[in-house]
Length: 432
Image (cartoon, rainbow, N blue to C red; front, top):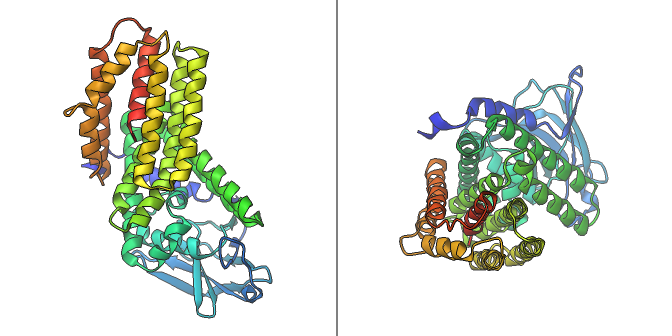
């Protein structure tokens, strides 16, 4: 079973709980923990004077997912909607901050645990942070709050789906299931596919993700315009997409891990609504595009392709990311963007004097045949919603393409170029 194969999940859960405090300043000699933040009406910075005096109360998420306020731990916001909430961190765990202004109630979640002396700043509290908190509560209920990172939740839940999540416990639960499956797949992928100190590389990746989350929350708190917020989110997505590679995971494996994580997320929320599916795909396809582009460029650099070919591949990657950005998560448009990218990269390789055009055409034709590896992969991965099933589909595809490459080796390329071209074919086939 998957639980027997996952990469030391208890240790991983402890690591994630610790990393959840990456956005805090710690002085454990203190007698209390402090959560800082501010309450907003919307992400568009439309503040109003009546935010002053909003009651902010600490709450905890119980094992069944219910959110219970701790009535004697509360404060009020100032004229700017800002607050500082101090409390004994030994009180409970799975902290949520609830902001009550008249009949309006919004939330923001902190982390699984805090220690006295921690000083934490959370992102502005609004309808989007409320949706994230509702999903976090469902993660506590399904037992996966300690393996899903705050970064994961941030990356998957946007303002596009906030209202749907806030108005539907079922939607929140499905997002939580998606996050759980994706986190399990990440852990198992590192265990089975990442070479050399996989556990350490996973922990390093999680630290980078925690740092990206901390930077986002700080940037959002200091932002005064929608443009500054957009820039903060763009940096967050870019940093998160490159986290694995920056933790010394081989670039092509880093891209595969990102793509797998996102694929499971999309598959698991597809039953919520088309808008929910498109919203998640918008986020995950951009992260996949960033990671795949970086990996393909790295493989091209490792080959004997000409500088002109390497530049053409880089240009194709820039076009891919631009097209993904405008696709807004619509399935057909995302697939078309990746297909166009694949064709551009394949054409570039076929026209390079140091790459066998015959090899590229033969492998591409073979894996896209009716019974080919890509055809089988597309059919199987479309319905994969659990980590073990998805990973089996991916590893089978990788093995099949590598086998096809060996069978079609024309013996005219160097080993480095053969390896690079094979990996590029795998990478460009994942989403096309």
